[in-house]
Image (cartoon, rainbow, N blue to C red; front, side):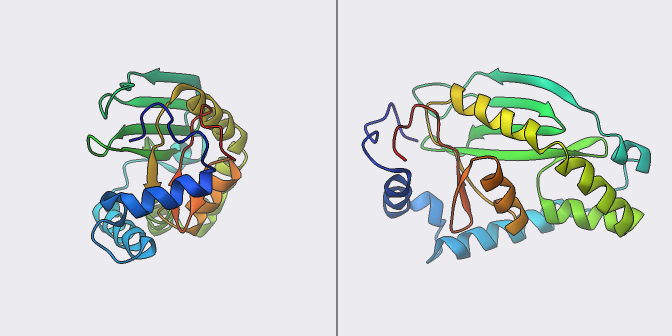
Length: 198
């Protein structure tokens, strides 16, 4: 986790390249970032792809929405505490990965719960209710993308470190880019407003 910003003079691209070069955590024992990302995405899919049908079509197509709210007790000095933010159908959760870095998840309301893996959500909805219902749900979520953009901006104003996360799929990477989160080779970096490099 970066402290303060001795990295203020770096661009975002320089920061990411340096982080990958110096952090053993991000490669997770793999040769490339792509291999690490693919392995984690597959692991998450297998872990969360359960056939639970704990929601109705009505709950899926009329998702609960939250007003913009942030609960932040992240430590400025180390990997302690969490940040949880809500807006519309979206949730961002920042939490320690280790004492050196922060992880973050973007989740969306899918039935009764927030879920973060786009392929798991798609598989679960289609397997229980069919592609037509999934397409309807997806359009509802896409129509609320501005809420996620506002949530990202608010979160960026409240963090001082740079959380990172492997994306689950290409659609997850596209979503991150759409709301201003930097993506590099399938990995997302959530830069705070205090980072001055472009």
